Image (tube, rainbow, N blue to C red; front, side, top):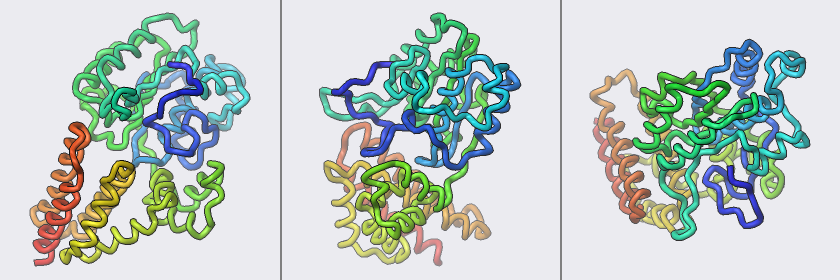
Length: 357
């Protein structure tokens, strides 16, 4: 792990103006998953590779770092501190917590998309070379404690880096642990998935999201309660989505929701305005949120209309697959995303008309 400094580059797994999950010692929600991990550790049955799956922004990485702190603070599962622990909490003042917050603990390796200083952009994927660096960590002695690799997230692995990861989790060294954050665990390479225990985390309630926001500090904790409640309600169980809404997205989300509810009618002027808003130089997060909202809307329609049969619903499902693939290609090749938005609404309107026929 590289040591953080005053000139540390931007972090792809940190939401702007919010604490990084490694700095967050509280966990709201996910009590069942936390207790399952604690029980497995106490019994000496902690798997060597764990997928923490669920929607974006619900606390998967927070739980991964929470478990990492606990294991490194208490490397002996039979210790009284472990056997009597109510949860995986380690205070910020603990030396291990301080080291992890500073990215300076020698037995932890973080795999994530790195910042490219030359292009001033994050790399689009986790490279195989980065995975091989983690392999070197696991090949040296840990002094009897755990060596932990956190992957955030699995969706950023390409075919080569996923296969490099597979090689080490197929035959892991003793006292090694891979914690894989996955927003869509079903998309993980099957050979990797089959060698991991999968814990699926539930989306948060509106009240839980509001509690998380209250703990984030300024500027989030200073938001008006009514706006926090509205953002939490519209966020689909995700703290990240709620923060994006609070950061100026509530009004835009309202316009997007109207565009979707009006289908198959399309207000093309509003679509063009939306396209300009979410595809500008600073619009990457807004584009991602728009795509998430559309995906959730499609999922809701598919669930409501499930009795109509798969063949009838197939065109709508295909709209999302086409748009998601176009978005991935645009990200990888740094292409203009405006055509994706326009094509998406044209395809949605066509699918909605077919569904209504």
